[in-house]
Image 1 (cartoon, rainbow, N blue to C red):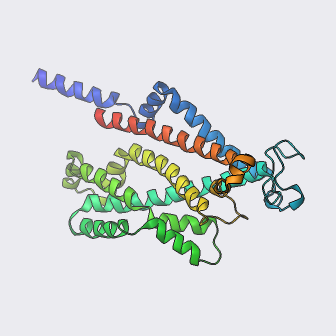
Image 2: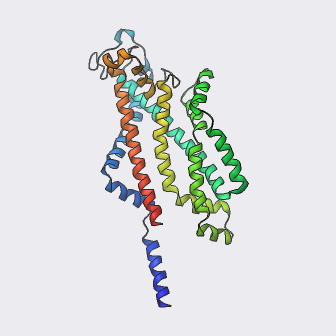
Image 3: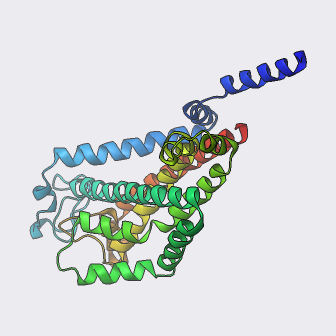
Length: 303
């Protein structure tokens, strides 16, 4: 009897001493200096993009001035020079980065919301509900998403940031749904869920107070990595000429200048700063996401 009591007390102490998600993530960042630097760079770029775009007039940044076309950096009062339209590349870069980041974050949030809702419903209830949702996911995944997006952008007469966000989100939520379904499926079979069902707790309460909090760190990790991939997809679309128009620039719009061989070597300032910003931002977000994934894995191993 005394041994059993000691074992229960020991288990209780372990549960009480189990670190929170925040502490596990914090400990992981303390060990990973690259992730700390990456987090600082990502936050700095995001803040600079939004604050800088508020300081400058969008009309002045996109205004065409042929007389100042292709001015080199540092000449004529232009810090990063000008493009073929005489647009100030320094100001232009802030608006391009803001638009790309806005699209990336917005698409990721929509994808994560749809994925968590459908994945949770599918994994928790199983049976016919799971079969119907997964068959629809399978159907969506066989559609060539990039080609369909290009077609939609081509046939839509006037499109903007919101249009691109909705189109991208409509075709890239399936992977997240599959991931959430697998996570919830394993949680739904755990003892605490079974006990909650036996005690008469509603399914909605179990999902929101039991299942989702236990996988919250993995949801945040997936959201972080989805932001980076969404920015990359938008950049690819703009580079191919199917992204935002010149009046609403993105990093892909500026990188698209590199498709001209003459500009690659002789007018590097119109595309290279955007490449530098994109690479730094994407790598930083990915390093942060990898650190959070390791923290989530560590949390799951500890139970």
